[in-house]
Image (cartoon, rainbow, N blue to C red; front, side, top):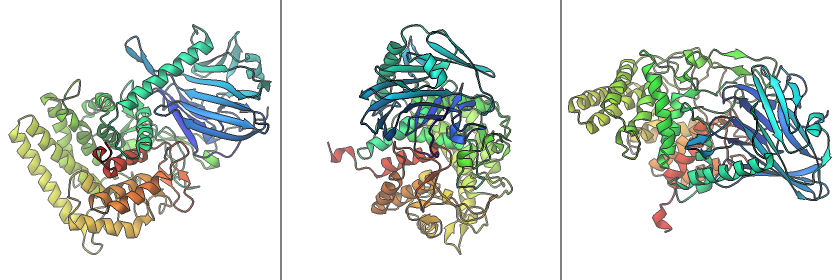
Length: 599
């Protein structure tokens, strides 16, 4: 059966429930969804192409003779509405969400996709195509059916589609006239109780209310509220709530640049990225994400035996062996498609700072159900010992270079942050001897960075001790409190980075060559780091202009990927990228006028 397709892009909307998620094209096609969790087999994989028929690996409700589509979120929620219009003025509306709400005293978040479809004008003709695949696109399901459902039997998993649409038309992918609303509920192969349309309607109402109540509690800035709310919901969706882990992105193998081979699997929890997510949401007074994440992080630390990996699986898996799934051609045919990530083998010493920074608020925040105590501090000190021991040792760095090790400034900076925060925690716990010890160690690391990361010729802090190349990660010096933004060395570094790494408001990660040559695209979070640095150094008008330019590059529903082509403005890299969405929140919080100016 022929299904009309268009070239993939990152004009996608995300919906989810902190257990699963899906990415939806502007046409309404679901083109990415992993089951039974974020890092699972993509039952809908069309974003990365197909092993055979290009229509495989997607769920679509098509309108005959479509000429126009519109897509937007229900404000303050993760519910997506898509409207399709045909050449006769007829129209339908698709409503997509994954159920999430409190039920019987616990969060109800099944591995389930719900789509409600209703006619808006006329009696349009539609066609439903549901084509899940297994084992990375290589296995078509065995299809069985009941009176109001279809079962898709895949290796290791069976999906059940409960529907009020005619199952015969869905199975045959037949065009039919739409006279009344219908619902599709796709999830585990479990007996369905209650009416399908009534259940879908109730789930939508309760899910909408849940997100609106969650959003209502955010302490948003006066300006850019919609952008901040969308970023916050997106970050929350990236948490696998059952364990607390936060994935860096929902996808794998979306290339950082066209045909670059820079294709990586981001469906794991990097301790670095997760810290920045937690910090951004904390700034909005959303501390529940941090509390869930710290449960997971404490298990990482206690099971680490000293060395801590830069990333783990969402259920604490240590082995994330990287392999290539050659049967899928990749995004726009730009393979390879990688599953797993070799970076789990790396030594990245900034990880110890990220653990301490991610944990530190729990010692100071009186709102938490469980504040961290002296026993937690003792565990965290073991992390600090590693930070101090490794602050001047070579590693792969935060950019995860696979073939080169240096003493990276950003890694040493985060080791300093670990010792600095431990000193502050010890003061809160009234342990002056320990506070003095950690302050002394922080001062030693600080002196080492100031002496060895500064390059007199470049008049800037550089990417490694004794190095020459510039690197945007040193902009974090002001954000983590290593130097005041007014320090002449920091201000000079900002100037040098702008001259070398910026394309207008956009910024590349570094100037040196890496394992794949020189980066071609801008790295979105680096541009947001620059915004923060400009604001801190008093260049607020420039910071606001750059921030507005970055917001203008979000897609149609306010989401950003990892990378961006400065020439075309096109988004590249895994999507949606938590780092980039964090930048939206941090920039708005830094630059917004105070509420007192308005109220």
